[in-house]
Every structure is written in C-alpha cells, then in structure tokens.
Length: 395
Image (cartoon, rainbow, N blue to C red):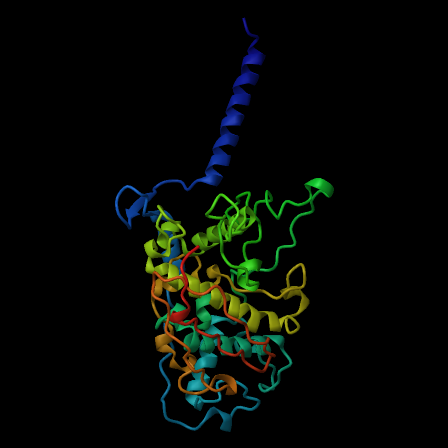
C-alpha cells in the first residue's frame, strides 16, 4: 500500500507538469475561437486563419483620427513667413500650418506638442527631432510619389507608422546575436536562438538585415539534385523562411495570402499580392538605405541599437498586424500636402518613369542598383521602377 505522502507527492507532481505543459502549449497556439476562410481551390489548404478575438483588438488599434479641416489652396507661400524652410516649400501658409498641426497630433507627445521638435525660436535646428522630422517628411512624400507600385493610391502619412507616438512601436535594429561556443560548433548561422520576429522558431533570429538592408535575393534550396547551375543553399532557405514568417506576422496573414500552397515558389500560381509584396520589400530596403541609415549621426545614442545602428523600417512598421495599413483606408487623400504634388521633393527634378509595374504573375528582376546615400538635407534619388521587359523565368 502506498504511503499517503507519496501519493500526495505524485499527484502534486502530475498537476504541476500539467500546468507547465498547458502554459507551454498556450504560448505556441492561439486560443479559440479560430476560424478559416477559403481563398483558393479546394483541397490544397489555400485558406486564411482568422481569430475574431484578435481581429477585434486589431480593429480598435487601426482607427483613423479625425482629419484637420483642409486649408485654402490659395494664399501666400509659407516661405514668406516661416524661416529656415527646407522642405514643404511649395505649400502656402495655411497648408504648411495644417501639416504642422497634424504632425503635433500624430507624432508629438501630448504634453509637448510643437515643443517636441521646436525651440522657442522656431527656425532653430538645435533639436534632433526637428532634423529627423524634416527627413521623414521628405520620405513620406517620396513614398506617395515614387512608390505607388506598392502603396497605390492609398498612400501614407506620418500616422501610418507613428500612431500618435513619438517613436513608432515597430522598428528594428541589427541583432548582435547571443554569445555562442567557439570551434567546431560555432557556425550556427544565427539559428537555434529563437527571436520574436522569426516566430520563436529555430531559424535565424535576424530575418531583416539581409533583405531589408542588404541586397540578398530571396531564395530557397536548389531545385535540382545533381550539380548544375542552381546553387541555392539550405542556409538561404532558412533565412528566407525566417523572413517570410516575419512578413506573415506583420500582415496577420498566412503564406497563402501571396503564395499557392501547392507550389510556393511558382509565380504563375501566386496571388497578385505577391507582386505587391515584392515591391514592398524593395521599398523598405530603399527607405532604410537612403533615409534611415544616413540619420545615424543625427540620432542621439539612446535612440540607436546595441551596435550603434539607426532604427529601421520593416513591413510591420506600417502594417502593424493587418493585411493593409489601417485596413486600407486612405489618410493621405485628406492630406494632399503630403503627396509631393507636381513640385520636386526637396529640390530634385521629378523622376522619369522607366517602365511599368510587372504583371502579378511575372517574376521581377533580382535587384536594382541603389543611388548614393543622401545627406540629412538632400533627399534620396527616387528608386528605379523595375521594367516589365526585364522579367525572367522562375528558378
């Protein structure tokens, strides 16, 4: 006969294991209710998983603020009144004032308002926040004017990323990685050290730097067994999957939002959203290299990453968990001052189109060349639109 204390200990141990196991499983799966919506043909898993509980939370977080009443299009230019104007010089006084009021609501802390960027002498550039804000205004106009292949007519505003906060909630820095062993077991390629952005998987923990800062192509393992011309490696596959996981998290979707589950790599079976995402990846890369990285010396130390790098943009910076930022509702249409209009942005001549956007099922060229990094006062050269004629067959 078992001793009562032994029975009690066995039951307590079993209960503890059950609680711990439930907690671990709870961290890996979404609790109900969970539903699915079929998005493709039957039987191949082309569906989106939805969670009404989480969707309700996202909906509340993606409401638009009331727009400030529009300014009169007629009026004296802002340059007649405001000194040290380096951007938005094409606006009149009313339009310029409206943009400043909007930025105070979209970005500045409630207890600081205009003082977040400005000194008592408004024309002073002493505060780094003003110098950064100037560059961000150039970036917003640049996106709305020259990256319509990704943002379409919806466009962006400061609120798209900031959502009423001085620092966007979602930004990334180069991951220095955790310390690891040396010698034969040192080459882990950043794997087996789970990170949130890679879905707590055993895949490489920094899915951003190669694709959203560097120019590495998104590839998977070779499609042929024997030696030939296809030299894609398993390591490339692992980096690709970590990056794809970060995108699904950013948009709150499954892989089948862009890909066919029966042929993930096949462009001719992908959805039109895959072409949109192709442009989005290159847009983020362009913005990081030509707007964010050049601001490294402008940001104070406490705004930089562990390795001293500037904050950077990823898909989640704008999307924030939904398939289109703010569910696709356009704020930019209420703020034509941020469209770039017919005026050159920051003094650059308008770009000459180099070709149409690729068809949704075409494979765009691997990469386009970057212009030289811009200074704090000089906007980036508009990115080249990949021409349709350069489409190539998938590997």
